[in-house]
Length: 180
Image (tube, rainbow, N blue to C red; front, side, top):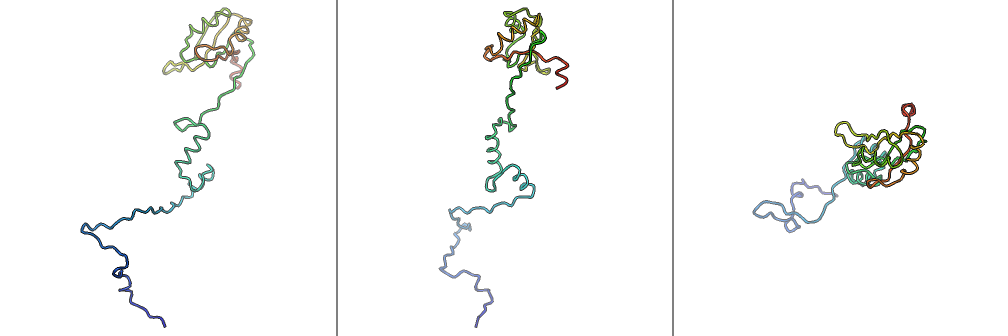
């Protein structure tokens, strides 16, 4: 037959059972062993975003974000880098030329001198930002004739200028540009 106790005495530790007495400063002694923290339960929204971002359940959110960013080649500020656009060569039908991959230090007089070696230049215009007048990295050059423009494309396309290979092609006309 089972005997029951009131439970009063059963809760106190027995003498010599391994319980430690507190020292004079009344701080409990701490063991140096590591106890793992229980996993934090994710909210529904976190589960949904984890599903769509291919987040593994054991990977912390910050490390997973770093993994994603480093795998797709993003910039330091977290924004993904845009893929480099393929150079689009436009047929030269007008004397106006597009000059791309231009050094940011290039000036209109530099372009004027460069293209004047090929033919007569009417105008050279480096495109800049309005607020700080810094070059956007491309320009337009107006040659005197279409033949000179075609010769400039054949001679100056992929030529090194101020540390960068130029991309020289025919400029899109305003009708073609507004359609695309």
